[in-house]
Image 1 (spheres, rainbow, N blue to C red):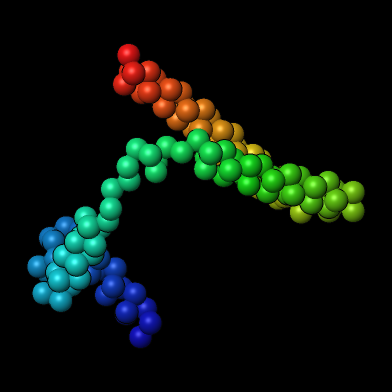
Image 2 (cartoon, rainbow, N blue to C red):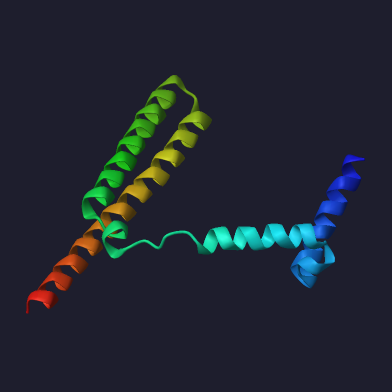
Length: 123
């Protein structure tokens, strides 16, 4: 019974993807339209809210702290002889460090854009 439900659900998804919502019925068409309306009614981000160097640097700091925590855990597990656990923590630490670097770069670009925008308005 469970296999039949999965097969039917996947067939319905394929049918919607290929033929549109008409193949599945009006109830699914209404759900699709309401989902599309919810997405389109979301407020657009302004330049000020999307580009705030202070917030971006705060996020970068949070990610760097997480990275440092995972590096410490990796060192601890390595000293205990748990190589696989240490490698997993090291991998997480690298991922968080990468995010921190990305947020720092984004903040730097944002700050530079604000400066050029401000000089363009003044000059």
